[in-house]
Image 1 (cartoon, rainbow, N blue to C red):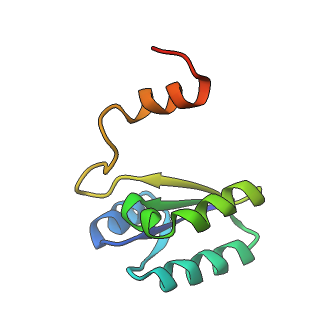
Image 2 (cartoon, one colour):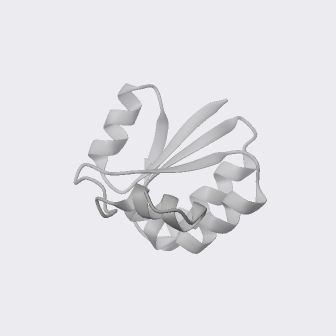
Length: 102
């Protein structure tokens, strides 16, 4: 299985390519959705890495894909500017999911 990256900047894409992961730069919602559709049609891609900025633009579609499909797995990563999530993201996520205070 291969990995594929969807990025909105050349720095993230270059870093991933140095690690042996192919990918594309996209910016608009339509481009992102078109690329995701093409990726899901391929059977050799098992992991899609998408920057948080792009994932934010198509969050509903990504959520549906994560619930419906098995592979590829979609993960969101910060770009060169850092994470867009608040510092207590993980703690809040656990509280909401499990319902216990940490």
